[in-house]
Image 1 (cartoon, each protein chain N blue to C red):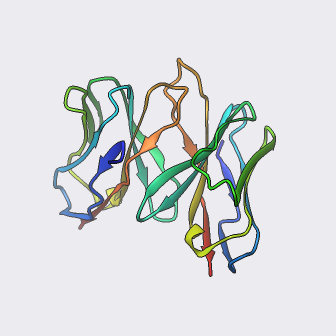
Image 2 (image 1 turned 30 degrees about the vertical axis):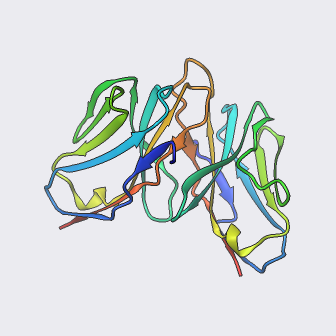
Length: 111
Length: 116
């Protein structure tokens, strides 16, 4: 079993839909949780960052962390075709340790 | 506009050939990572350096892969000899590693390697 599990999709939704992306993890020592977005032929870029449990909102994006369930989520409201990308969850024990990534979920938002 | 620069962007080579990938991290970042991305495995950590010292290379096949950081502006990943199973996108990333930092990584655009 990998430390971080993420459904690879692909996920296809109509424009304007609410998208829910999820990851589960096994290592209870993880404290830093991130979502990266990766466009085709590009490197991943940080989208959202959360420390420990709780919610964080940034525009149309909301990140949630439930450490008791070892489950993190990313919600995208009013999805746009420009949101079409691969979304990777990532987590680490501290700012000093490497990020462990999920495999990524490929999202297509259809106009 | 600070960014991680990787070369080459694309490389096609034949089995058995040596491949060298280069990375210029963001100036001031003290930690440099090499990741490999495939459809099957996703992003896998190969090796990383802090202040140019190798901290962990347990993700690399030691017999054919080597990673070095000859100076603060250059990291290299070498494969010799290359094999078809090495075909993947190799990413370099840099960051400010510290206990008080978030650990955010900044990625280059990757080197897409195809070994025939």
